[in-house]
Length: 198
Image 1 (cartoon, helix red, strand yellow):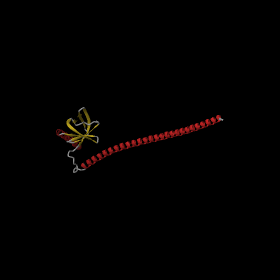
Image 2: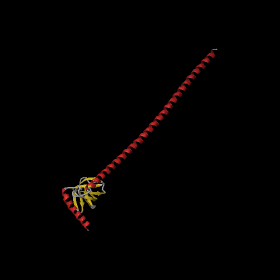
Image 3: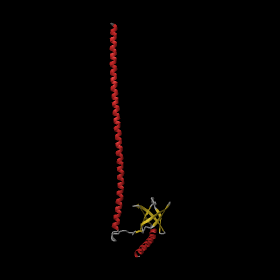
């Protein structure tokens, strides 16, 4: 009888142990499911962050392109406004002798000119010339820094670089050069008058 009681007790112990093991397995399964769920949520969150970063990068690139486009258009408009301004001024000034307010008459030339600069010479063509200054066209990309020697029709004079406008280089003559240039321009006027008369 005592043996049977011991067997029943052992069976009850085994049942309790089995129940404890089953409960532990169930808890571990729940924990594993929770971990799997957390991993899945983390993956989804990482994917969403990557998508948003990609979207922000694309928006930033588009903003940069738009800003660059606006900058280019602004520069083009500024150039167009300057060209229009110069054209209007030229038209108004030369519309009639009464409105031509230029202090110094300019003469179109088309003759060749050589600029003596620090590191050599630059060849160009005269667009127009007056007693006070000259405007030339050249293929050179780098303008002279300050004063250079201009040689045209065998005459050499000092000229001071002032600006580049509409692709033309502009120079001013000093008082010494003005006297020489005046003589040169008289020669141009005489030649032009002779051509018109013939």
